Length: 300
Image 1: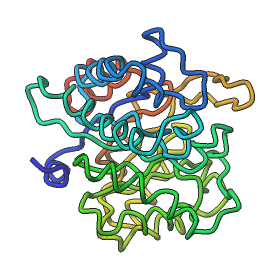
Image 2: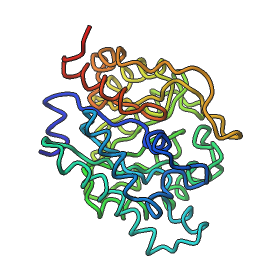
Image 3: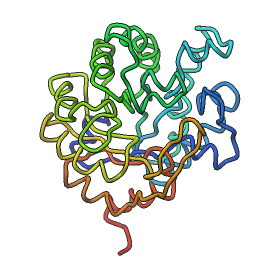
Image 4: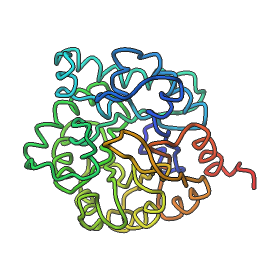
């Protein structure tokens, strides 16, 4: 079943944070490539992380390509041909991990923002000093390779500002694979400070965009954003917030308390979310609770 068709029948469960699952398994993700390094070094670890989320009830696995870029790999001595192979591998690993799920599951090929490649926390600020055209040229080659690997959807995620959203909307044209556009937000604004109504409106008439929403944000910011995205775009909404902790880019660590709870799922669903899961620091146990809430099997 195509993902678009599945969305008309029920809300779908997204996975959680890939990096925290890999770290829980003992893998060091402290370098600039983050989880993408394991595509080359330990692909079996990525497959195991995907399986853990499928087993927890996730309907969709998001690939380990968030921080996988031609430029980022080149800095580590990996040439363009090998980078393209690793990008394709990211889709293959997620697809193969769901082969024994015994139900329909889907793969979202992750394309993180330009700032993710910089590995300095700028994906939470945006406004990199690049034009929309320059950002489009950065994103298009990677998206072409990911689309060629035939995922079910391209996850244009953790987008911090409307300039990058415009670039991504241009970059996915003609690829033949649907996409979702997901902003990282603070309150009612993008991380760069633009009103979310303006940001969501960019995708309202984009035929390539299957869903619009938010990720990598505080759970408390997701509720109002989901309602707004549904009203502005009329499209299905995607929502996968963080645990509630805050990333300290300088120290490369998470700080503050976690307050992601599966109890928020019903509110997100009722507000219009059709793709619901977690992002950083949300693991398989939390996703299992999300799945139980959405299926109506959660214990009171």
